[in-house]
Length: 84
Image (cartoon, rainbow, N blue to C red; front, side, top):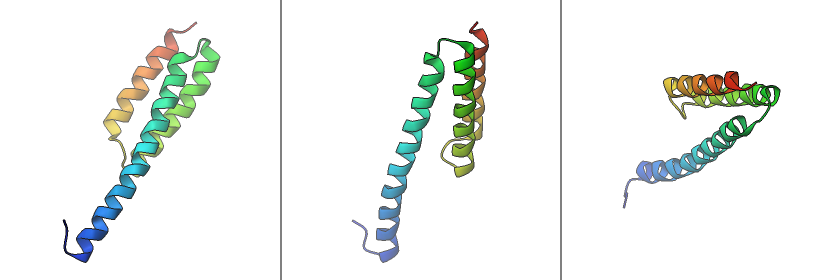
């Protein structure tokens, strides 16, 4: 167990941030599932725009790496473009 005041604060901060990050990632996964579950191209495109926006926000917050976001956007774009 930590003895220094600053170490105790870091433990609390890390736990709080971990919960926030889990919520952000969970929301992102839900949005990606909505894109993949869309049956029409129009619906998929509107969900894709929301997903890409959410990915960019998470990159700016430092929650996910920019290359991971780029890969996910690319995969989703391929999926959306395959729909007719």
